[in-house]
Image (cartoon, rainbow, N blue to C red; front, side, top):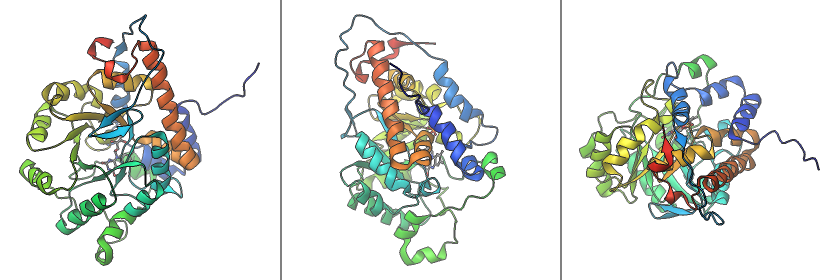
Length: 354
Ligand SMILES: Cc1cc2nc3c(=O)[nH]c(=O)nc-3n(C[C@H](O)[C@H](O)[C@H](O)COP(=O)(O)O)c2cc1C
């Protein structure tokens, strides 16, 4: 019997298909890393520096991927990373992503720099699990309003991104040309004050924020906070000491400071330092089920994917995002069975070698 050829089998296939359908300036914005893109490339290459050490004759009849992150149930240890401006890529934008994440049983992390309002993300998938990502802005009233609305609309955690006191220099995106941002979410929360923000302007990030400020944010926040964008054990200890509930080991997909470590390389030191105190996640360069296995074996509780979700969105909206998540879930199940691991929780450093 012959099966029909299938062109979209892997996340890489979705990446190529997205590049084919998107106008060059949008592709440049999405694909770009900072500077010479050393870190962008290294995020992917880092996974290839580890090899898997499967065990045999383990009962893998049933493989269970469900777990929890900060108490939220997830069907698989792959979450949707915050990415801004999703309506650049599909008319439904963040709403499509929220529906797809909910259907896949995972958490959608909605970015404050989003192109749909927080309420519309909530209404798209009221039963889905969602987190809200923001930077800390100089406008305190805006910070408070964002947090209050997130809590009111059932976002279960705040992801505070701390690696972007300024944006990285994304030369490829600049060369690609201008992409107009619709700061719909921020404008909606700013209300009438939005008229003071020039179209497309990025709301000012508070560059003076330090760990003591972080502690006061934690103490008044209605939501548990994950610190997003840490790469060192020293910062991980400070985050835990100052009340973070979780840490996302992330370099913003190589879009901030070029030349920083790949996230997979940074992970073990962070896990060693605070793995018993806070939940640790990782993003950057995850493209295969085997990559998820490697990150979890090195101590991540789950991973997030950024660009692959947007590739799916660009190719086929909600269905495309769902397909990307389903492909990764199926690859992960396959890899776990072949690793002799009936659940991701079995994975340890013993299952890897350099
Ligand atoms: C187009 C794009 C927009 C992004 N926007 C945000 C954002 O608004 N806030 C944030 O914290 N991270 C943002 N990120 C970083 C992602 O959350 C994530 O760290 C990164 O995409 C992970 O790497 P990956 O794309 O290799 O999976 C963005 C990434 C991309 C590619």
